[in-house]
Image (cartoon, rainbow, N blue to C red; front, side):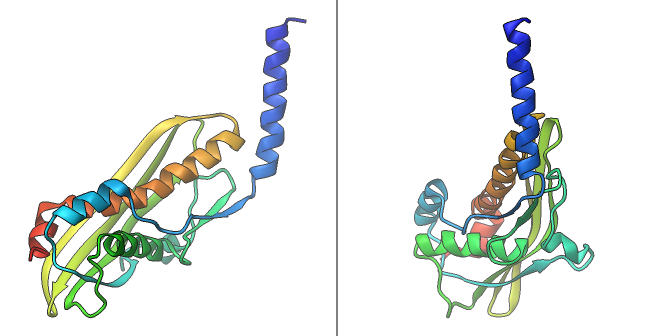
Length: 194
C-alpha cells in the first residue's frame, strides 16, 4: 500500500479516537486576567477610577445563553465565574484592577448585558461572536450606553480533538477583545474622563 495512504488512515483513526475522547468534554474558561496591550492603553487614558456593577443577560434573550453554549460538537463550556456574563464582568474588573482604575467606592458604575454569545466549531470554518450592551452610570445618571460586538473566524479542522480546543480558545479570547473594544471606545473614554 502507498505510504501516504497509510499515513492518512492513521491520522483519520487518531482523529476518530481523539473525537471520541473529547466529544462530551466539559471545560471551564480560564480565570479572567489582564491583557498587556489593554493595560498599557488604560494607564495612559486618564480615566477616572470606576466600580463595576451588574452584568447579566439582556432581557429579550434566552436566559440559557448565559450558561450554555452550543456549537462545540457535543462538548460544553462554562464561564469561570459561573456564567458568561459574570466572566465578562470578571474580565472588565481584572483589566481595571491591573491598571489601578478599579474603585469599589466610585460613583461611576460600569454595567453590561450580554446580547450575543455563540461559537461554531464547524468543519472548514469556525466562527465565534460575542456582544454586550454596556452602560456607565455616574452618580445614578446614565452617561454612556452602547452595544459592542467582536467576532472571530478561523480555519477549523475536521478532527474534533483539534477543532474543539481551538474553538474554545477563540471564543474565550473574545471576552478580552470585547473589553478592549469597550476601553478603546471614544464615547466610553469621554464618559470616564477625569
